[in-house]
Image (cartoon, rainbow, N blue to C red):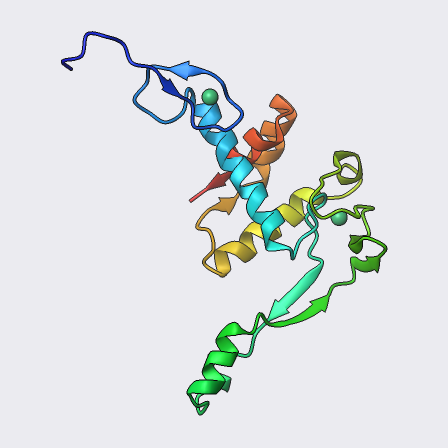
Amino acid sequence: MSSTRSQFYECSHPECTEDHSRTASYCSPECRLKHKGRKALRNIKHDHRFCSTCYKPLKVVYRPADSKTPKLRKKALIIREAFAGFQDFTEFAESGDYGLECDCGNVDHYHSEPDFRDQESYEWWLKLVFETFKKEGQQDDSFDIETFCDSYFETDDFELALGRALHE
Ligand SMILES: [Zn+2]
Ligand SMILES: [Zn+2]
């Protein structure tokens, strides 16, 4: 260390305003975990297959398997690449005035309603979401339901609890 002046860095958590002199990106381990939880929630929202309040699956998307299309010529393969997949709505989904609605009461995909969530066993649905992501290779982390429940009870911080519960 040759520098005599202390350096300050901005914490990488978008909502944190703490400056810190650590060489790490975050001001604290909590901020790192909170950001991890926050990113995981954003992935769920962007995925569009799960309710963003109770995390139940609302649609199932499937594509034809590669093994089903061995004889396709180039043009057909390009079309298949661009094809997003067939979609089925699950038993929890209903189409309502604002689009796809969930039977927990959530009608706006980009909004989470914790009051609705509390009526549901959403922790298990969260587990299913992350198992799906892992199976598809979207994310390596597993979701530990016990860590999540204990941590959420203890801190009342959803993002932090989620960040703690996700581990490789
Ligand atoms: Zn911070
Ligand atoms: Zn829901």
